[in-house]
Length: 142
Image 1 (tube, rainbow, N blue to C red):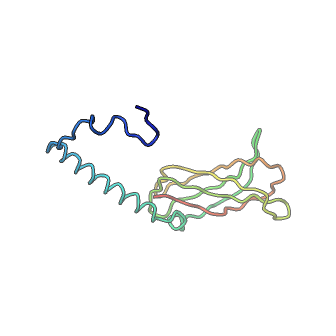
Image 2: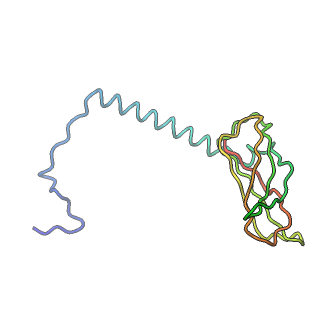
Image 3: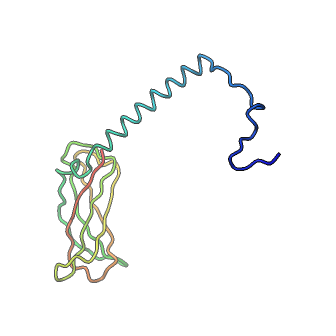
């Protein structure tokens, strides 16, 4: 007998018959389904939260460019005055040349940014023609 891609193996006649599930397994399966439903609701709530809106009250201070031994950096600070604990926060920075033309970007991130905490961020610059930097946006996930 030759079997093609659409043939079933083992043949249906030789497969074992299914048994009814025992009550303990049914109870565990029900708990699993409830947990899955709860996790899906939590995931949906997180996805509905807009990271730009979450970080709306956060503002950068003292943004500057510094030079270290092998690399230049954009530095600055953000104080969390929002009252929210951010599981993840990103600051995106535009890099400008001497004419104010956008020539690149960089970013920095922090995890577990607590209320009233000050984050002194530092983001590397690989381009030598950068003369200034401006924070484009801050995004935060609760």
